[in-house]
Image 1 (tube, rainbow, N blue to C red):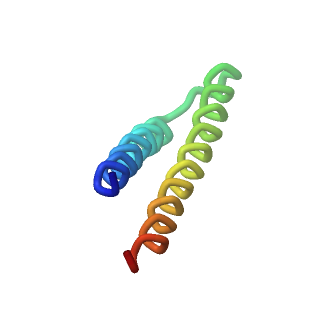
Image 2 (cartoon, rainbow, N blue to C red):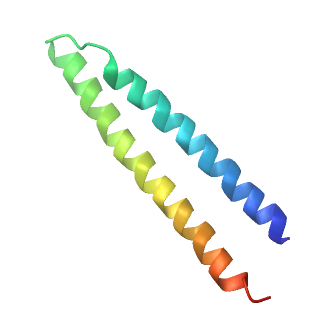
Length: 72
């Protein structure tokens, strides 16, 4: 069970990191000055913040798991 859980958490972290990488690449692209492009960029920035928060949560869960099970 332990290895499966950690493997799962690392897989989840990799998926979130891939999403972060994709969003960062999107942000590097020039935007038009029209309102639609700006609103899309704001949405992508919000999504990026959400993904970064998710990866922090996953990292915290992994660390907590190791802290809890290191003496077993």
